[in-house]
Image (cartoon, rainbow, N blue to C red; front, top):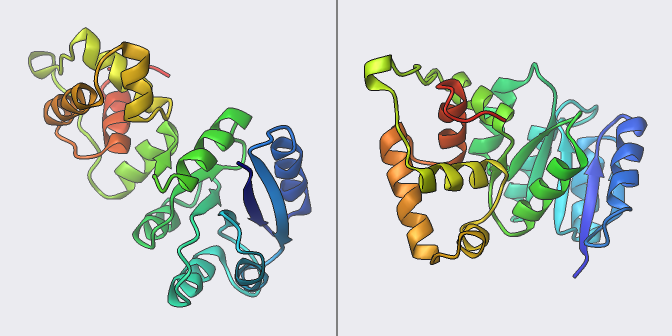
Length: 215
């Protein structure tokens, strides 16, 4: 199946770069481009894409306002926000508005494709470095554990943690490890409890902060 992608960014170089990358993967096809948020909203209604790559800073209407307008119109199209390193507060707002992920503009091809795949499945996927910044921007930076409180994960829990950091789904992890999906979820629950978190993205962020996970 080929998924239709709409790219909204006011920089042609960025749009062309994304186009070149996606042309190498038959699962995705760019069906439209927008240089501002207002045009992006119009093209979503016209082209009915499966996913939108949306820049935050654009003329006429920024990316967040475009997402808000789409939601007001009843559109459920998954939106991935394109961001730079100085826009943490916008990422938090985007999450609250239902964004399915964030991509730094210098992301690798693999990160782009992985985030797109998660979005069309209806999942939220944050790259580990973005996840750590979002977690910190909430005003709840995970404090490193002291030596006496150092979090210890089992070998299987570490395998699961590394897998979710790569963006793998529970079903994929279960297949790779030769265990049931229910067992994977049990490992996830144990990881969350040990780290004091309640989501995959926070688990990765906290693990990086504490030196448990090295990417």
